[in-house]
Image (cartoon, rainbow, N blue to C red; front, top):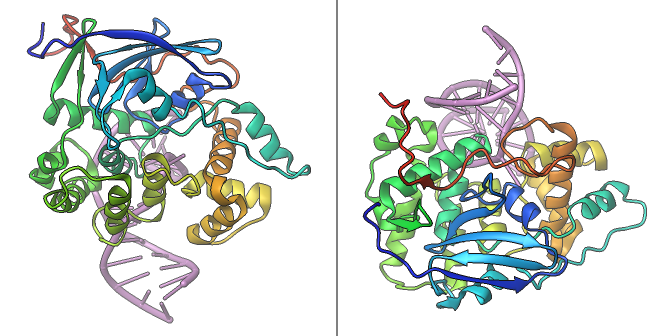
Length: 328
DNA sequence: GACCAGGCCAGCG
DNA sequence: CGCTGGCATGGT
């Protein structure tokens, strides 16, 4: 029993035709979800704990609260999930007949959707993701939530909400240095400070206001929000599906498969122009497909076209009463 | 010990 | 503009 308020548990199901939960939550876009050994996807988003499981066209859910707070206002759980997972927004990507790689990638990833992440959590998450493997980044984000968020007890598991910007803004870089965050350490409080200052004037930002905050962050050196991280924030939390984050993998596939060379900015402009309003989906298909082909042994992703029953190595909660004996 | 991780940034030409 | 090292740290 932990010192958390007990929440009403809600359960139900929503219709999700053409949707794939495993690809959506196991692709590496989210950091606070994991697939448990019991087969359920468990995670926390918008201050609410969810357990999800897909059975054909229906998505079964358990949630820690009846209403979920978002920047569009509070939503009932089923409406929230439809919005958060874009259940009814199946992407339609036009691909030319001779682009066999993209056709194969699109086919493999049928059912994948971009999640509508919380803007601030997304900002900090991708600032931390720089030059670090997925699993390590997950651990660091969970550490932040455990240190500064508040706990929610759900089905004998403890989850932690992501802290408000002003909480992280008041931390010193040395705190994160001591947690071995490396040179990401100072970027966390600095980014939080810029967000926090704006939030003092705007109490509950709309999506457009969040977009302005994100855009402003891109111009502030030291925040860790450069071209790639900025595009991740746009794509994963700002509802900008035309954004293309260019990392080392995208750089390689652009060169290998399309003969496009040059700087990150050049490849980014090429991909965004090519894909138009759906460039994000087009790029994500290629990214996951290419990475799966070239680094199938990476242990930080759940998606595998060969075997998708591997539990996530890092879960966003702790079992209550499962005290580990290994601690000194 | 190399070499790389879903890069960013200051300091150059 | 575009390019180059340096940056901490953990994993293979």
